[in-house]
Image 1 (tube, one colour):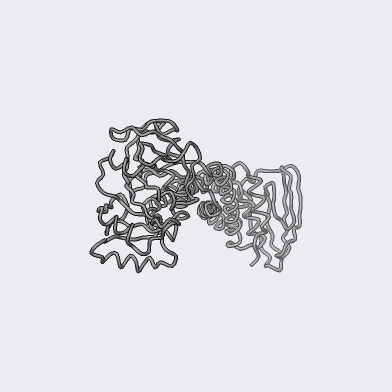
Image 2 (image 1 turned 120 degrees about the vertical axis):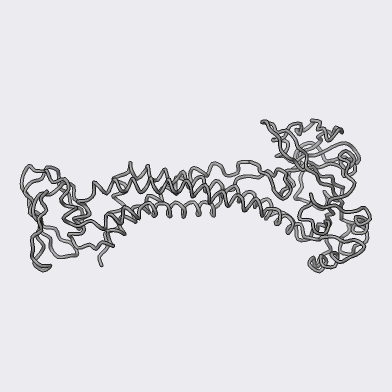
Length: 451
């Protein structure tokens, strides 16, 4: 079965560039929103998936799913920090373990409104354990034992009274902001202070977690099973990486759900727009369809040609959507982590995966929008197609056209517009009021086509 040359849908999309452009813009807007939400999810996943260490362990209360739900008694803290053999030690023999407090403060945003910001009480070992992931970029580090705090860069930019040199009131205790830090993970959205001073200001009677550097070769799964059944120091143990990965589930699912939901609603509108545009164009292209059918091209070939044209429009829509979302790459934003009900700051990440998903989505929308018009075009009969717009005439003409099928003979008595043939009868401009005679090899018979 002969197929319609690929040049036909390509040229048709460009010749009818206005209608193609409007359909592509509708598809592009849809996939831009889809890609934007996927970029949000990619940025949120990045701060959790690519941070945390396998040789750092977190100890929490058994059954706790986050440190906000946890609480460890003082005697448990002392046993884990000073007696557990899996905890590594520094050059001076001190354990690389720190007991930390964690709570959410409701603070005012710079632009209005309020949000929950995590405040963490840390020990000196906390900063040592973080190593190169933690960096002071402005001001100085904490003076332990003093009412001082350091804040993540995103917090200093988004939250009132958190700029360098400001004073933040924690409960009824004023804390001075002495430094701005960066961290390659979710800790960059937190406020840090001395664990004893923060605990006293917030009236916290327990530590929420212990973070510890592990001795190389420690089997964390075996350790978790051991401490789960320990009577003296029961605790839930996770590597820092496993814990951070567990915190992204709800938000990641929510963003994915929103991407599908919003894109589906907008996609229906885009598909309807593309369908309407192509249906309108088919009304003015009946003669082209009729000539293809008369030349021996099958209905499936015509259906495929129009479907390819819709696919081309979808590809251009995907390119428009990708270009629209690219400027958002790296833009900082924030959302609530539903595991801890605190705000987490992160950046849009428009990577190759997001762009590929946008392009695939655009192609799908384009093809869906082209199915009905392509099916309608394939169902036309030659007599129905060639009967349209037959009031032409200025002088007679006669043409012979050769293609892969046998010779086709047109006797046209009048033309008003220029008739143009490209290659093997790719396109006809003008309408025919005449008779159509098939070559004797295909069976000689006349088919009236006068309108």
